[in-house]
Amino acid sequence: MSTLQQIVAALPGYNAENLPVEVAKAAIRALITPVAEHETLALDDALERVLAADICSPIDVPGHDNSAMDGWALRGADLGNKEARLTEIGTALAGHPFTGSVGPGQCVRIMTGAAIPDGADTVVMQESVRVDGKTITIPVGVQPGQNVRRAGEDLKRGSVALAKGTPLHPAALGLIGSLGITRVSVYRTIRVAFFSTGDELHSGSDGEQTLGTGEIYDSNRHTIRAMLQRLGCATIDLGVVRDDPAELEAAFRRAAEQADMVITSGGVAAGDRDFTRSITAMLGEVLFWKIAMRPGRPLAVGRIGTLDEKSHKAAWLFALPGNPVAAMVAFQQFVRGALLALMGRRDVELPLVPVRAAHAMDKKAGRTEYQRGILERTNAEWTVRLTGPQGSGILRSMAEANCIIVLPPERDRIEAGELVGVMLFEGLV
Ligand code: AMP
Ligand code: MG
Image 1 (spheres, helix red, strand yellow):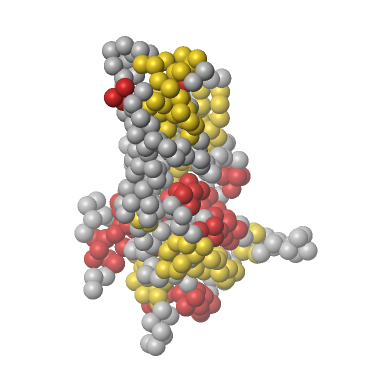
Image 2 (cartoon, helix red, strand yellow):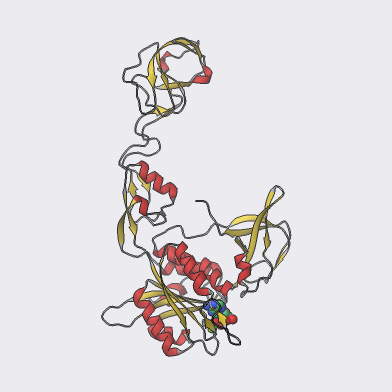
């Protein structure tokens, strides 16, 4: 079996010391495959889960030829190069078909969605006919076959309605429901354990505890948990772990034992008291990257195990930088995709939407910058502006934002009015 290092080293442009964002994303895609286990759920319990098998349609959709319009159903053969005068012999409504047959010179009043009666093959819309009691006059120019939705036109019986790997958004649930299917096979929920590292960190205590000099409250555990919940992961909060090798090793082992993925924050840069590198090297194989991005340059990705000979449990590890904005950006750009891949999703990329910059934006060339933006309507057009100071420790810049502005590595400045790519925080339901 190849090591993680062998897999990623084969990627074009791979350089752990200065890794382009796109290569880092490709490396993660190359490493991670979906979990093996599936489960079967009731359709309405499966929101945001991922299909573990194709959904094949057990029926034709629509199930029968039906009318696309309110009008009259008739025989195309009755249409010619002069007006046709037909006799209305009945009515077809959605759910109440006309049970007779339409003969030459006859027609049936029909509503949208109603089954096309036997004998008829064409619907003329009501706006274009003349009605005189039961005598319906059809103008010239109506085409045979017009305004009929064919059985199986949307979906043929037996064909794939939704492919394995599709996320179950509301429309997908509706589509599956429309096929009469009430249970679905989905990938199992992903379990993620997370902890924060740093001697300076405290969990909040509603003002009862005062912070010593240089001490701060832990924010990363809140953002990381919340982002995991939004992705539908089961979360295991392992708290704050001191910058102490023995405590850290115990925390990594405990986390790897319980989870599919372990996420830590802090202690991933090459500082004096940062032990992540030596400990994870003992527990598995972890790649330490310097990514050509800001914020979020240091990132460690790998596999760690409990080294328990019997269970052989192992988990993916993502060690994020400690700065709160950097931790969030690294999660959004790399961990999100990794989790979706584990969940079985095939579409793991976030759309990048072009929007005009409301003002000039400066950056350094040679790295991708993820700036925090407010996308808003200014007069007729949507434009994006920065939230204010962009330091990687300023969580407020993130809390006020409604999007991330992605500024590409080749640029060193964006002028007002230029198009920039944004990733939106909110999506449609
Ligand atoms: P580190 O990556 O451990 O060097 O931390 C970088 C910066 O992020 C330091 O200023 C830390 O105090 C801060 N930091 C690390 N972890 C957290 C956390 N969980 N919550 C808030 N700030 C943090
Ligand atoms: Mg630290």
